[in-house]
Every structure is written in C-alpha cells, then in structure tokens.
Length: 252
Image (cartoon, rainbow, N blue to C red; front, side):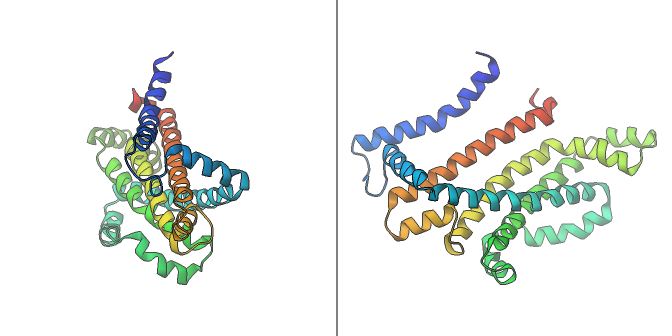
C-alpha cells in the first residue's frame, strides 16, 4: 500500500472509531436509545428514508443551496481580497465594512433576506453567499498581504504589469491561505444553511431534522445530522485532494 493510500485510510479511522465506540457504549447500557439512537438504528432509518426517496430530495435541496451560495460568495471574495492587497485605497475602503459586518451572526440576517427574496431558494442561497464571503475575503487578503516583499520587488524590477502581478505573484502567493478560507467557508455554509432550513424551508436536511424533532422521531433526526456530517467529511476530502493538485508545493 502506498503512503498516500495509508494516509487516506488513517484519515477515515477517527469517524469510524467514533461510530464503533458510540454503538458499543449504547449496547453496554450507557445512554437511552430513545433519545440517543445507536448507529445501527440510524442505519435502519436511513434505509427507510433512502428507499422512500425523501432523503435524496432533502439532501439535493441542501447541496444545491450550499454550492450555489458558496460560488456566489467565494468568487467575488477572492477577487476583492487580492485587490485589497494590491491597492491601498481599495483596502482602506473595504476594511471598515468588513470589520463592521463580519461579527454579525449571519443567521440574524435571515429575516431581512426573507423579506428581500421570499421563502424560496434565493433567500437561503443569499444567506450562504453572505456567510462564505467574509472568511474567504479575510483569508485571501491575509495570504496576499504576507507574500515576501522580495517577490514584489523582483516583479517590479522586471517591469511586470499590474495584470502579471495579479495573476503570477499575488494570486499564486495567496493560494494556500485562499484554500484555508475556502475550507472554513464550506463548513460555515452548512452551519448557516441548516439553521435557516429549520425555520424557513419545507425541504432540506435542516427541515428534516427540525420536522423530526417536532414529531419526536429522534432516530430520523439523527439521520439528518449524520448525513450532514458525512457530507462535511466528503467535501473536506475532496477539497484536500483539490488543494494537493492545485498547490502541490504546499503539500510537499
């Protein structure tokens, strides 16, 4: 087995171990299975929801909202973060806005977004985009601003244009921090979206969790929670592989 394959298996050990410990503790009588179902109970409910088709509808709705909002929020955030690092007036303009808006809990904006976009997907996508924007722009700016000064000096000495500086120096120099911001933002997007789906949606994994709680169907509720965790793990693995592909010098 190659070293990379061993690393992938090692990466999966902790969640598998968590499920095993969870199952064993409940089988030994630690905890009430009415309120904390065992992984085997959750698997049975998962199969029921999966064969019924409703789980795929809810999962698809959540994934669509997450990734649509993610792209809408991340792309301009990267561009603005890089431009802030290159041009001081832009940085001065955006700094107070980011400082004032970043600490606001994004879920608190949901009532305003519902008024603006209604109860459809648009309001949830806007919420995700807003939540994604700030960690990405802050990390992008930090990555670009901390590029070693020697690279800027060499590029200027060779007469590099602003376009070359942007594409060859700033962008690639900031890539490790950009990916760090993107990974944080992806996790945040699931958090805010599921919270919004609790109260302002009739579909999605958040709606599945909340509706199951109202009906006291705790095992169905845990299905939604576990699916969100699995989606988080899958997206984290895919992001790590993408990062290794795009910036192999960082992994080395």
